[in-house]
Length: 351
Image (tube, rainbow, N blue to C red):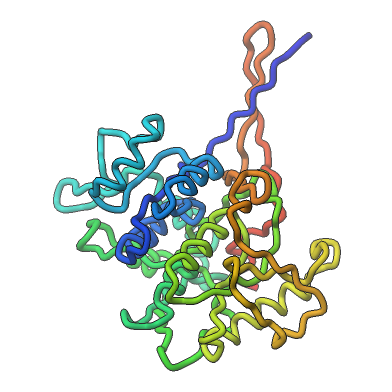
């Protein structure tokens, strides 16, 4: 009996954040907003300094809807080029104020992974295996934008009428941890259950991003393009940490700890190099201090985003179903585990 197999894949929306080139306020706003969403770490940032590149990223990341950072003519004009990706008219904002001043998210937010982690690791357990970490830093910190892109943070409660930080504190024993402006970032910080890791919790990629070289993004913490590049690599599911050589005293311990973990991976998952080093084309990079036997240098150039090199995967929750319909229109459903070489984020954060 002939059958037709249709693969139905449920997943969080992938939003494309539209920002004005060099506008740090746009960038900081969307970074805080996107961490409130389940799957938000996989939402690319579209900087409109080069509209052609931005349009290319819309297609490359298979964006479902475009969201301008602000009510701005340039941002609206770009989004208008993609009428099929227009944000629904029902609610024009991600957050709305309901009765009694309580906020509501209009998109799938982190309530869902928070609840799952709570039920699995906290409910009825005296000593949970994991706890959340909310890193904080001074507003004038030279590495503030790196920390925001790497660890994540949330909008103020007064801005969106929801307190996501409080949600983590109440349900996941979240601890607010200050990153001092004159001290090093803890070596294990990249493993912590931060807003960044929580946003991608229990989402599995359906394929490799092709250029799958985990490692370091070497850039300038004060360079807008570097922060956007770094974010978009991570939005493609690449496991990279930001490293600015000018701030080695603060970032060095964590970078060395991460590189050591990559070097200790089984050889069958290292491919041709111990770790990758990503950087903006034209930047000189010196990583002799890491004493690696083999490094995969990757210069970020226009060709990276053309769809033939970096190929951002879709990210899916486990148990994505297949739907099979036979000639008598009988339906059957069964679970399917998306392909992934990534461990459960919470499990890895507790090791």
